[in-house]
Every structure is written in structure tokens, then in C-alpha cells.
Image (cartoon, one colour):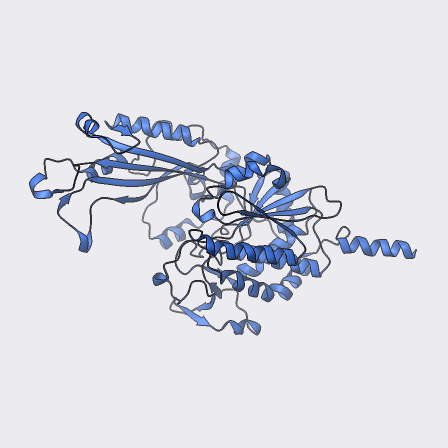
Length: 505
């Protein structure tokens, strides 16, 4: 009998017999540990993390190695020829399955002149006043007070250091309670995501055996705008086009040569305008081919609780593009977006010239049905139909004299889209976990509008992937005054605990 009791004690200590915590238990653990988690968040946010500066990233890599090694995880740098990836792992005794989590630790660049605080890497607690401004509060107030709408401001609080701190906090809370997942956990930490993860696709293939898992969970991006618990079953991919049109070899006086030398800015404007109609739909033949929606998929779009009038008011939009019948339907199409244009000078630097060149950069968001190579081909065919000769380098004098309209076209593909069926076992498992945590099913989004570098994992490892967003949608990611709402931080910890404690299918 004594030996049996010792065996039971051992099994409980390994987590194999640990009781699945109910909602009350999860909330109790969250309440006990969330302030320790905030210390962790403040610590990690205090490290600058612009991947343009490898020396900054090295500090972040070392921090991640130390934090996970202290918790008895293994940690291995996966060399990429540049900034490495970091793979951390916690094997569970007798586990038959493995979940691979994805986070990125780098952040967007900071223009501190646009921030409402002296240092974007010093987290600041703020509360919103009745007038809508943000008032700084002493961080010590959190020891005795809490309001879910108070926020921590700092670069990467939401994108994506906050979710990483949530997971570590959730792990600590469950560990102290003697609760462990019945599956092994791997985490891949990406330190170049904001630079487009240029080395990630090749690294996933190179380290395929080390990364092998049964499913992938992505901890990045915001919740639905309702701020309800959310699952997103895919993300659009992204590719880019770089266009340059040409006028005179050197900028020319607009009085001497106006009405004579063609203006490259006008050529560029005409070319770009030819690609879409007045309702924002791409008119390039075949661009939307292969994309249709069943009645069941239309119901999925309608089930998402979007408040489109509120969105339009927040964005200051009197009208929207008519690519889809709703916001959700619209992001299930590929997009063609002009993200920037330049030609000549404006404002205080303005000069009365005909510019020598005009440049435009376009990004193209992809869905699984849209092959970027095919779309690039369609776009180039369309450009030729507008009378342009396409080059890949600046034109020679001979080309200038031969072709009346010349455009340089360069393209790049960052990564493809991915989408996991909602009715997959992974989806059912996650819904069960989140229902236990919140007492209701999460908002379910078929595919998110933004892009994350997950398709290389899905393609190389042959596994389903689902995003578990936790941060507030109005977090100003990529912008000045990035922030994380305290209510989201606490609920994020609870969410991750529910997933880690849910028995895998």
C-alpha cells in the first residue's frame, strides 16, 4: 500500500495524473501570479530589440536562454548565417505528442520623438483620463490597486514580448500547482520577424528534425476588436512589388520642359490607377481566380462580431472598398496595396522640376488560393498592356530611346499564407480549453488580415497551425505609444494555462 502511495505521489509530481483545473482554479492561479508576470514583462521590455542592431538582439537571446534554463528547459541556438533562432524545449514523461509554439522577440524601430514618454524601452503604467489623454501612474500602485483598462506602454509590450511573458508566467503558475501538460512543448523564438524573417524558411528546412511536432500554436497578434477571447485559423502571406518609372535622365526645369518631357510621376499614377477600379477591386484579369465562398463559410464570416460602423468611425472612413460584402470576407481575398510613393520634393524642399524618376512600393497580401508567382505574372502582363516596357535594372540609353514608356519591376516573396480548417481536431481541442477558461466559445476567425511567417513550418513539418491572440486590438503595434491592457495581460495568462492544461486529442 505504501509503495502504491509513493507511486501516486510520483505520478502527480510528473503531472501525468494532474487534475485539469477548472475556471475557478485558473482564475485563482492567475490572480496569484500576474504581478510576478508583470515584473517579467517590465524586465523583457526594458531591453532594446531592433533587429537592425544585432548587438541589441544578442542581449535578448541571452535573456531568453537564461529564463528558460532556470526553469529546467533545454535551449539551443539554431544558427542561420545571421541572427540565430532559439529553440527551447520541455519534454514531458511518456508524452505522445508535441506542441510547437511560436513567438518573436524583436520589435519595430522607435522614433522616440513621436512617443509620449522619454524612453520607449522603459515601461510606463498609464490610465486614460475623461478627456481621452493618458496619465502616468506609479508602477507601485499595482501592489494595492488594479484596473483592467490601465495599460503598460513600451515597445513590444504587445508585439510580441507581452505574450511571451504571459506564457512564462502561466508555466510558473501551473508548475507551482503541480500541473503539467500531457504533451511536450517546444518554443521557437524568432528575433528577425519585424525584418521579414529572411532566414526563417531555409532554417525550418535545415532544422526540420529538431522542430518536428504535431501542431503549431502562434502567440502573436491582437484579439478581435470586441476584445473577446479569439482563435485565428490562418494568416495571409505577404509579397512585394517595387516599381520605378522614368522621365528625363536628370530632373529638368518645369518651365523649360513642361509639356515636353513626360513626367514619371504622372506615368506612375496612371499605371497604378489602371490596376483598380473606383471601388478598390483589382481589375487585373485573373487576380481573384479560385476564390469562392460556400454558404457555410459565409456563416463563419457573419458569426464574427464585427462592429463595422464603429470601425469606420474610428478610422474616419465615409466609405470602404467593395472587395468583399463584409470586413471578414474582404480579408479572405488577396490584396494589392500601395504602401508608399515618391517623386521629386514637396513642402519646404519643393523645387519646380520634372522629376527623373518616380517610385512606388506595393505589398500584396496572399491567401492560400493565390500563388504570388502567378499573380506577379498577371500584374506584369497588365503592365505591358498599358504600353510599358519592363526592365529589371535601370534602363540603358538605347532602351530609353527605343521604348516610350519604361518601368522597372522587382518583386520579392516573404512567405505564403496558411489556413487550418476550423473543424480540425486542433480547433476542437483549443475551443474546449478556452471554453473551460471563459465559459464560452471564442470568436473564430477563418484567416487574419495580417501576415506572420508560419507557412514555412506548416509546409515543411506538415502540421496544422492556429493563432491564439491575447493582446488588445488597439495596442498601437508598430506605432508610437505601443501598449498592453492589464485586463488582456491577465486573461492572456489564463488562456495559456487553459491550453497547457488541456489534455491533447
